[in-house]
Length: 80
Image (cartoon, rainbow, N blue to C red; front, side, top):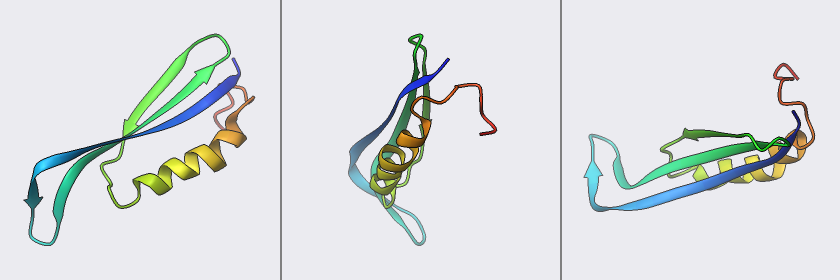
């Protein structure tokens, strides 16, 4: 199986009220969805992150750095 696509999807939902802790505050919930699609139609999905500050940078790295490295690679070559 070969990898034919890698997608990073940034999901952000603003909170109605700001949540405050001792040294922080949260104004939104953030999730990063990463999908890897293979040439036989299989799609693997991972959900991660709740990091508002760096989420856009992580999406950029997945789209511009990791995606080109993974397209065309054998799905099972995880050590590579």
